[in-house]
Structure formats: structure tokens, C-alpha cells
Image 1 (cartoon, rainbow, N blue to C red):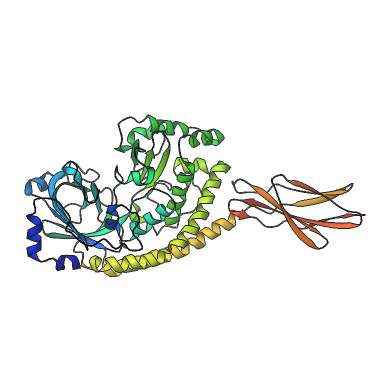
Image 2 (tube, helix red, strand yellow; image 1 turned 120 degrees about the vertical axis):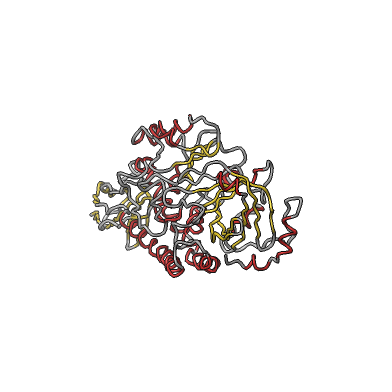
Length: 489
């Protein structure tokens, strides 16, 4: 296993740590956060995507024999030992619980690149910098090894609760397993950072064609909370409705601004294996004590390659399908697509691709269990940056195609005034929030905002007034109408 940290630690120091009676970090200077570290909590340093740490696991034969090596069935945690070494500190060795993780596509057994779940609080009250669980993804479905670090950052920038990501070189009983993504676990430690203390009633995990409908309520796994699914059933009951009735019911049970931000981001990064496309997989539903739901992403390893349409299809997740039939909801979705365009630009993701790739590639190249050769990995990293650059152009095309259509304006004189009126626009399912009316008198255009489709002004004798009108939605203005003119004799 490549690791400059590992080479820097002599055997004597390792033996001293192993003999330590208490689990305390080695005293070191304060951590110097990189530009990609988020949060002020003590654990933030573990989720620096430009810093590869070392994680050593030790398991006795009895624990190895008891591990469940079945796809989609992690089984029970088995006792083992964990040591984590960062650039500035060592944590452990400490007794923890260890099990395998992974499902369709990502599961690997111990003789390959197994994925890991580690229960740090196997001993009550024990943590690493406050963290109770570690999730180590093997990245066998992400040849670039950067998709999760990049993708979750986009979600977080949109205000969607999403894990932070670091990297680790992992070994088991001295055998090198290679480079892993250290994905922040969604649990009682991380969720309060987003929702506040005591604001998680349930965290439901949705996977493989599981949606928030009555027939599927029992299929959700409860990751946090009691086995009382009445809040989820209430959400499903709302989804049995349609149109305005659905909209009124769902707004009482879900934060629809957050939901539409989640869906917009899934589409943008090409998360075909998430909720909004067709698999209804890799997502969480979080409920608060008031019964309000939000949605959280998961499983971003296969993103940044599928150029998903921003339009709805018949096999999309049920809430998105219903959303785009209601102008107020589709307007939230469009608003979040515009916000996403701005946030992605501000994040400068191509630069992050370069920074993360540069940091992890020595470990990627030395990974003895990787399933993608280094040349292919570097190619996929470059392709990720290209996807990011191209995707904004595709979103711009969608925005242009969904701007309100040109209205037809007509004007007439009546007494001492003239009136312009106009036809309805095609807003492509969005709310028309206003019309802009241009009025030219004496050669000067002045502009007015109106919410009705007619406007009257005083017109002096022997004068000419010209009008033009355009409609506005969340995506912006449509084209101006042809100019119409009135002449008062």
C-alpha cells in the first residue's frame, strides 16, 4: 500500500501506540484545513478529500469467520481493532465493531476489495473526534475514485444534507486493501449538524424501486428512529393524491424547496442510480418531530457520466412526476436549477477534480485491489471534468427551451386613453409571475410590471403610443411581442 504516512512511522512508534492503555490521539499541532474541508467540528479534518489517511484494521480468526460475506446483507458487527493515522495525529488502537458492506455491483468479499462499516462506539461512549461510525466505500463502481467527493459537495452547496468525504489507505491484519472513500455516516452525529439537536424522528433508507407510496412503506429500512412508520405513511397518503390536492397535502408533510433542490442536483450530476430517475434507489427520507420530510442523497459512485434529461418521464420517482404537473412545484424545481447553475460555477468543480485527483492518485496507482487500471482512472477523472463543463451548456439549453413563449399584443384607443392587451403565454408548466410592458411615448421607452394581461395609459390628442410585452417565469423573460401602436387624432 502506498502511504507516505505509513513510511514515516517507525516500528518502535507503532509498538508504543499498540501498548497504550488509553485511546487518546497523539499530541500534535492544530489541523490546517484545506480549501475543501467543511465544518468547524473536530471531525472535519477526517473529511478532507485532498488528504489520504491510514486506517489499520485487525480482526482475530474468530471474528473473520463470523463475518457475513453476503451481498446486501452486512450481518452483525464483529469485534476487531481500529487505528487511524492522519498527518497530525494517531487515534487508537481501539476495540471496535467491523462488518462488510455493499450490495448489487459494489459488494466484494474479503479476498477482493471488501467495503467496510466500522462501529467506533462498540465500547459505549467511544468515538474518534466525536464520530461513532465509519463508512469505507471500496469505489469499485467508480473508476475515477472522485465522484462521491465531488458530487456530495454539490448537494451540500444546495443546502441538501449530504455526507462529507475523505480518503484512506486501508489494511486488514497487515494485508493491504488499498484506497477507500471515507464517507461521513448519516447518523445521530452528522444529522444534528444539518437539522439541529433532537430534530430527527426517522431516517428511512430507500433502495431499489422503493418509493414513498403506501405499497412500499414497509420496504424502507429504518436507520434512525423507532419502528413506527406513521409519518412515512402520511407522506405516502399525500402521494396517493394528484394535482392541486397533492400539492396542498405534500407541502404540509415535506420541505418542497429542499426536495426540488435534491432532485435538480440528482439530474445535474447524472445520478441515474438515485431517487429521481428510474431506479428509486440510494436515497434517504428524513423526518422531524413535526412530521416534515426532506430527502438526502447516497451512492454517488456512478455519477458524472449519464446526461439525464431535466424533463420528467413516466418512470421517474413519484413525487417528481407529480411535482412537474403543478406550476407552483415545477417553479420551485426551475428556481433550484438556476440556483444550481450559479452554485456549480462558484464551486469551480474542475479545479476540485484536479486537486482531489492529484492528492489520491499515488494511492490509487499503488492500490493492490483496484479494479480499474491507473490510465483508465486518470481518463475517467478527466472525463468527469469534461462532463461538468458540458452539463452547464445542456442546462442552458433546457432553460432556453422552457422560457415563456412570445405573447401577441394588440392595442386600441378609447376616449382619452389607450389600452394594450395580450394573449396568454405558454409558460411550459411554470407560474407566470408577471409581465413586463414597454411603453414608448415621444420616442422614449418606459417599462412597467403587471400581473394582469391589460394596461391602460392616458394618450394625448395627436399623439402616438407604442407597446410591447413579454412574460416572466422563474427562468426569466420570454421574447418581446411585436410592437403595436395606437394613434389618437
